[in-house]
Length: 139
Image 1 (cartoon, helix red, strand yellow):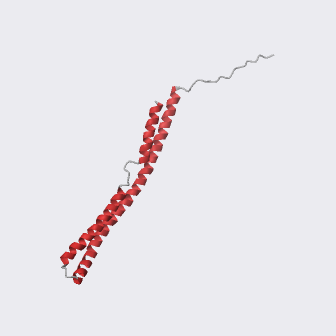
Image 2 (cartoon, helix red, strand yellow):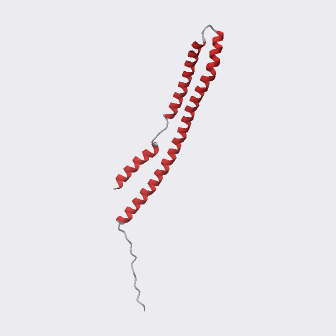
Image 3 (cartoon, rainbow, N blue to C red):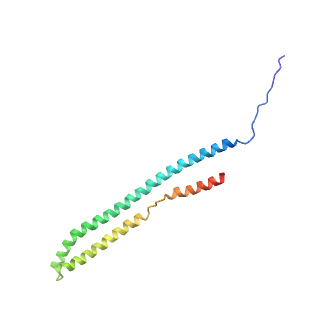
């Protein structure tokens, strides 16, 4: 008869090594940083789109104010001077003041749009805080 040698399978029930734990943490950190960079890129793109809309509104307001001031001022001044007893210089002051009021209203509308722009992307800032807390608990 042949002798049989039986071997017991070895099972390692010990915890993972420090090297493998550190490697896992480094991998997690790298993945997390890549995700944060991608999130920041998306948020910067969204804020850039808001910036373009606000700048467009402000530019349109300035252009409209300038064009309206030139065309309507002359038209209205001479029309009102012809229809009333006031001299043209008085009507230039009245019409110029009215146009200035419209221009200021448009500039404030653009300014309120611009105030909605976040320089620091809020989602990225929040997740970065969470990540710092997570890293602190891992060490």
